[in-house]
Image (cartoon, rainbow, N blue to C red; front, side):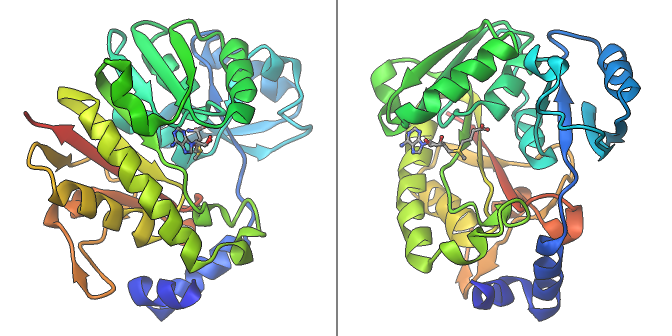
Length: 301
Ligand SMILES: C[S@@+](CC[C@H](N)C(=O)[O-])C[C@H]1O[C@@H](n2cnc3c(N)ncnc32)[C@H](O)[C@@H]1O
């Protein structure tokens, strides 16, 4: 894995990445404005001895710079006034930018971090279709939907590769693809050694199938966000490049702000679609987040 990092990041940056992976990640929360105002919940959390710091770009997102007790066990948490969520994950819904009357499909939704955020941005209106293949993860999704007061969603336990069987098309589609999770090393050190090249290859096959199914299920003029908590090009640019090379009705869209650095347009000696420069990568050593990748795609006709 490290040899590969050196190939696409260079030695100096790889060392910085490995060092950053050893540093703990600040926990952060997303305030659920469907249920409470930012000022009210902030006051309540801070009164209990916690210190919050605003997150740039996310008016209802805060880093917890001092945590006086586990914020996942407070009354306010159980009442769904906030969600414990990392910044990279929060950016996904913001980039997809769903509107209240949209039909939005989250193809890999459990346990619902991004799904509950999509509902928040939709102001609990429109239609939010939440799919996950893993039956064991559905209860966590449903609990989070209930806790956060989401009433515009339906949950489907199915393989999103068969999205077209639903006979519904989305204005916005989120594919937070299953991946090796190698961007999560800061949160889970076991991932340093648990993932092998064959895992990357296996995931890439599934990711390509899901991305194709998602683009097929998108309305003309609709947008789809492909994202992963991985920095591996095999799970990111190479997946998008493979799928879009075969399609002439989809194009990569520039994300409205530079949250991360540009996606790769050349890697491991392979030239990729030039527009992949519009996709973005978040790195622990540059952005102080988990490792993450976003690519926004539009269906043009
Ligand atoms: C990265 S996690 C999703 C996290 C979720 N989006 C969130 O923000 O809480 C990937 C999810 O994809 C689901 N999954 C894997 N393959 C799938 C498939 N073919 N169809 C639908 N869901 C799938 C897994 O069960 C897992 O819950």
